[in-house]
Image 1 (cartoon, helix red, strand yellow):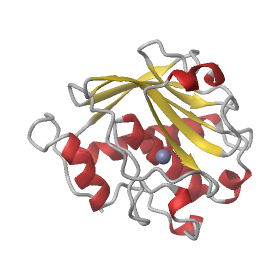
Image 2 (cartoon, rainbow, N blue to C red; image 1 turned 45 degrees about the vertical axis):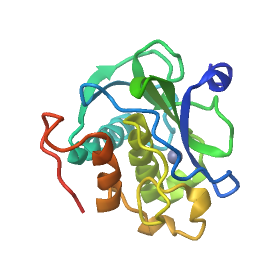
Image 3 (cartoon, rainbow, N blue to C red; image 1 turned 30 degrees about the vertical axis):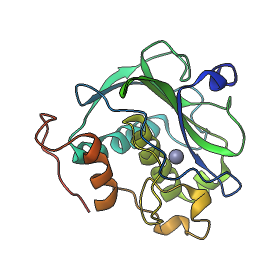
Image 4 (tube, helix red, strand yellow; image 1 turned 45 degrees about the horizontal axis):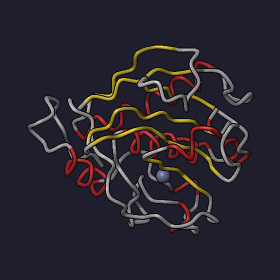
Amino acid sequence: MLKRTIPLLLALGCFCIPTAVAQSQRPSPGRWIPAEYRWFYNPANAPGWLDPDTARSLVTEAARKWELCGVRMHYQGETEAKPGLMDRRNVVGWSLEMPPRLRGLTLGQAEGGRLLERDIAFRPDREEFRRFPHLLQKVLVHEFGHAIGLTHSSRCDDVMTLAADCPRAHPDTLPLTPTGHDLERCQALYPPGTTGLKGGKGS
Ligand SMILES: [Zn+2]
């Protein structure tokens, strides 16, 4: 599914391992209008070592962290639809149908600076997720950042950093919440006072 759709994508973000090509600071594909990301969760193919309830909690908690930016991260419940189908429904889930070098992949459609769809797939077979729970949490938050229109940051201490740019970062010291700089970049897309939600700088 993902294999077929990837070449057609208008916008794509990923949390790659250090062999990936750096793609920092590309222009954003757009923003959600209104400032709300409505998403479904597909629990299929989650890592076997992760309890299903824990997996869902980790994903929903990661999404909520972007509400600091003023974007409503509205969880719509579970779905059986696979992430990667371009059907104008935002689906977040787990999939092996992506290049093996990736840990997560956000893909979707945008038009004229307006996001139309953003699906997220996480790779369940990455052994480092099991060894470094922080890494999994960071990848979850990172991909939700792409889902609301953020591109990669050039700062190595940001959630939106591309791993390829900062290969020496130790998994245990990764940020698990958008940094002040992440939020500044996010609020450039969603200016405070225009979103209907109270934004904040966070930690
Ligand atoms: Zn990324």
